[in-house]
Amino acid sequence: MADTQRTRAALQALFADNTTGQISAQDLRDFLVTALQPEFVNANDFWCSPQPDQLTTDLTTRGDHWYSQIAASDASLSFGKPCALTVLGTWSTANASQISCNAVLGIPADSYASAASNCKILRWGIVYDSSLANRLTGQVGLPLFLFSATDNSFSYTDADAWSRYIGYILPAGVGSVQTKGKFFFDPFWGVATGA
Image (cartoon, rainbow, N blue to C red):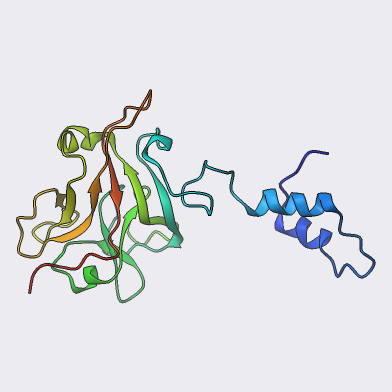
């Protein structure tokens, strides 16, 4: 019998108290294919980290995401533009001079209107935006910095008194996957360089 993905309600029904041993081996296999993401397909499941060559659709992200996040009431979020978690628990546009940027940064996985409550925020992983291809070409491996002068502004030149490391530029890919405009977002260990 083929393994089948099931709803949570269906799994709860299958896994009743099991007082008479009615949970079958097939029920357990169905649970596995429901609970786990496909191997080596979805980035940062417990099988592997995201890989640049797996990301071939423009304006997408792969990695660790926070779901059902809320945009600040005074800020809309744009795909690929750094955002910061505010003290109110909402996400706003980021610049490195904000104190909040020393704590929690993210990348919107789509564009969201102000006060949107369905935001998907990348916390660690790959961003693919083909509009960045020319800007990032030839700079593979260089770090990216969030600047303070303008919200959402980042570059591979650390030329701002309040710049903050947010990741690094990725290669275009190997084999048939030659897509430019990818960077790895990794803000966890970076700290602001300003005093």
